[in-house]
Length: 236
Figure 1 (cartoon, one colour):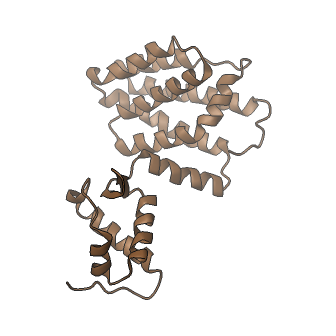
Figure 2 (cartoon, one colour):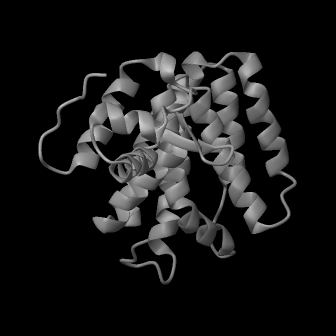
Figure 3 (spheres, rainbow, N blue to C red):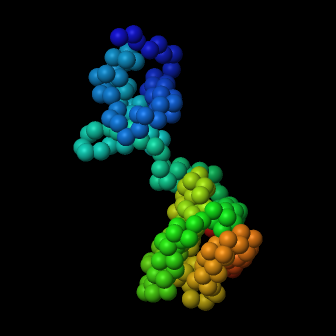
């Protein structure tokens, strides 16, 4: 077997990059087992510990998952991978929650507009179910989870997978902030009423109304955040 020649620097990173290139350019490999460490060691002409480090890096990138014990399977990066990476950026760059919220408003306003344009009536059943569930939530944890799932579902019916994944990641990052908002009984929270109106606009395929309602809903939420005691200048 012909060995793949590598430059003399960070071998495990080079190998990880080459394996990533192979995975991204051959989708037929998704959900198949990664070749053994012994096979990869021979192919790249390096030791097995170097291969292990390369595989570890690919797992961090979301391209490899461990299944059924020690088996490594080639996979597509999911929302969790994106969320973790975005969370690292937010924390290391000390990005304030206000800025994350601003991005949320931009994405969700467009998400609601797309949902109104693209959603079929059958696709709206899960959203309708979540609205019914929201009316019977008994505690803050349940209220927050249902609220986030409503927004995720609107993004889902928008028909834009990348938008859905990005928004879901942002909502995961903002969950602690949203929880603290919901825990404050002093703040005005018309979220449930906004959700119903947004749903109706989407059902009526009124993209402008859906967009405007979503923006008004999230601007109110952002203002609640701005005025909440103890949040001034705070990071995640």
